Image (cartoon, rainbow, N blue to C red):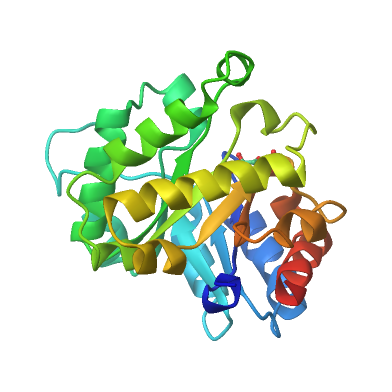
Length: 256
Ligand code: 13P
């Protein structure tokens, strides 16, 4: 059993929600509820909230992340925010390759790989999202899709750098739909991702990797999902915007 060796990580993905005032308010509600957490607790917030969020969580165990970043350090890239800019203001985490970025904003496996590279170069810890669409699951190609996304994103990432990477398995059909993957489905794909990583690196590196599940995880279903051997945490959308719900998921992860 390697699960005990891995750090459970519960991360909120606030998506395009909350202004800085609201962010401060929500974080001030979350922080006391999770102060004794036995897992890592992260809130990934919109760029505009980062300063307020870093300020509001000073002296707490809640860490802050961004939801995307660009690989170039600076330059003529209107509308983008670089990994360096995030690092410069002290943001430790960044989500990369979320399916909403891939679906609505043209992120591809190739640009996801560049964003991962850029973020690791700046010392950030990456939450890399992978996952299949419903049609892909129905075609029976989930393993192929998820393996390909993982292999391309990890191109050029060293075993040492892998320690600053978390993979989030997010089946697209389960995101924001209330349709959670069953615990067995989540386990099956998280295990597959770990096997892919073992093939690329070593068994030790794969055993040490934190793999999250994301997609309609909530206070009710978290315990069962998180009890699975290869599910080490969660990337939480909707439920991360309600302090008691998010705290209940953190509590479930603390119990393991
Ligand atoms: P929901 O928890 O709202 O389904 O969102 C999951 C997600 O996309 C987290 O990144």
